[in-house]
Length: 431
Image 1 (spheres, rainbow, N blue to C red):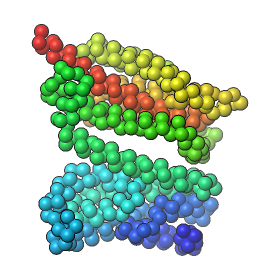
Image 2: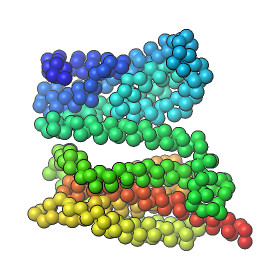
Image 3: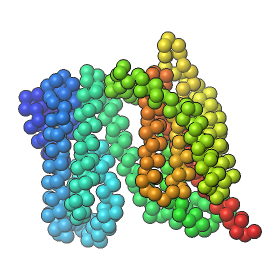
Image 4: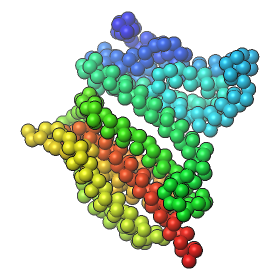
């Protein structure tokens, strides 16, 4: 790597373009490390930030474009001639074509974060004859995001890069793998939705047997089930890391990044962000949701019960979890803080805002309203979490745990609400 950094210092943007182009053609070059060093050089003033991102994006997009056309021109003739020797005949190729046509584009954006996968994605998309326009939209946008993120991280970490880059790379890889697994999970859920829903209904309520009884909301229920499985898996991993005391380096790196990006000038805005995690937001939101249920919902009592159950029982759950884990938090203004795991503010923001958004998603068919609601929940939860880290009242791992435990809580209650809704409807019809 020392040779690459010397070349980077001497030849700058040309090395960035060529190295990333060759890596996208499946040469074993350390792309993340190169971009992180580029960010470090930007921090030191040796390279220009926008030009570095532009050069890296040009190298990656050129490489993935070339790999796509190599796969497109040479892939299928190679498969037809030699595919049987590696168990890749025409039947398997046809199945790959169908799969990539439906779901391959979703993986393109996140494949960059998985070493080994990003190097062959272009070839596979070319072999399967994915339309180039679709390929370019996802692959180019993912490339720009990937290079911008790693160069920005190198710039933000600055002199701390040597100490933190292994941890950052580890979590970026985990992010990519997690995103890919989530995409595969969604594919499996969509493909086997009827079978999975039947099992789910049997497990949660023996009286529910008919898939179509869920009507238009069956996708939301299936999505909630997929989210529940994902969040439970993350929760178990968090608990394991907590017991093994493996949060220290993550907390150190994440805190350093937040405090580097958001300096003292952000204090007034952070005070406003912190209010998003209090009753000043939750109180009006709960009241508005309750009024909306009374005016618009068909099963008013059921939805009102679950609204207040999610809020009140969620608070009790958070109190119990924090007492159970009993984690000493940061020392703020000279005073130690206790019982910060998981974060009360992020757990509550996910629970209250998320459940209110779910009711909106369930009853409104307008896609703009649905997308806006989802992004609003994500933004509010993110701002609340950043403010907790900024003011050093909670560790980043506390904030992350709040998101995960809140995700488990809300996805479980969404499933229970819909099951009870169906049971109540079936009971009314039988009477």
